Image (cartoon, rainbow over all chains, first blue to last red; front, side, top):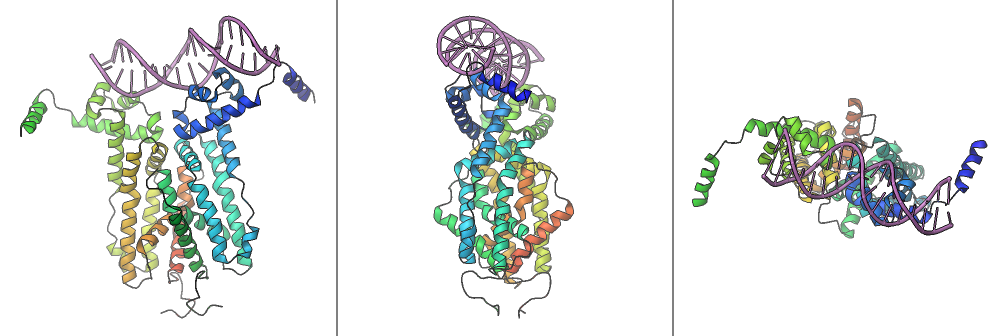
Length: 224
Length: 224
DNA sequence: GTCTATAAATGGATAGAC
DNA sequence: GTCTATCCATTTATAGAC
């Protein structure tokens, strides 16, 4: 109670921090960190790009590490708004998985996500806490959503999945695949939308053939 | 002709470069680049660790970029000695693929390879040439070896693979999977040997189920 | 009193030249 | 090895704005 009052008093005293400046700093820092990496980004450049003084920058974010943390946290939250997969249960097994896979691959290949991935991997050794945060906010949650979907689709008889967690991991691995690896290395040419769609479908094909559904055409042996 | 003579004259003039020093620099630079990344490694630290003066360093390697290139090239060559997969054709489909997969995953999870991967991904935006070199010397060649193996195993009737290049890509993706992703982010705990073996086997299981061989136990439907 | 901006300064590290 | 010119994160000085 008294600590809350003290905080209120302190907050009331003097000129309040300008949220516009904070947003401007965050935007500029995001751009520069993702473009140049943590070590390559200078506080001078960030302050200049944000149009604020360095003192303002420091008064809002403390130091470079904390600024980096805030940026990464905000990006993880921004990418972590998965729409519900409920509607996709009504589709055919193949169509449902292709839709999820396409969303997943589109996110992975988004240029900003690629840059974030690069920075996280490059800085993992020096910022282990943030690498963990990134992993939990990204791949771990989407794996949970996919395994949920597989569990329910399996209950509906679409296919037979014994271990939904394992199956979700394998689907994610197939979807990432070579296109994502090439993207993280910045290799040209980038895949065309048609190639991306083919990649997603090939992954779903493999998965469905392994789990007792041909997906595309009729079954080869005497399955129901 | 005259240019060759000039080169010989130049080579004879003065004290020849010491190959021991060059090796010492290369060793130290490898260690420091892989540990701290390109931007985090200083030429001072490398010279100190190699026990040479900075002038010696610069006279051998020109500048930081060229030194980095030499190191990466040497590492790629070092990792690029695949044993022949011929002997594995005599094994069962499942055993052959598990063996290849285990070698592949063991290489991917090797701490030095993980560090190289981190540096390459982190520096891809600023050294696109090297990222390409790395990709060609690494994943591209191993994909070629795996697709070769699949083509021959398929010809022997072990399983039915329509597109060996695609199948090799999918196998690599499955083998990399979550363990490699976690390793690049430095997440603990590292997988145990038992978990690695289970991961490889689960990948091979999925692949073989999709391609008309149960692998482990007897066939469910009326296959030969 | 606390925020902001400008500006300069501190203290350290850096790539590369001599 | 030393030197130089540059860059960096962070702090401090000075002044005006709420």
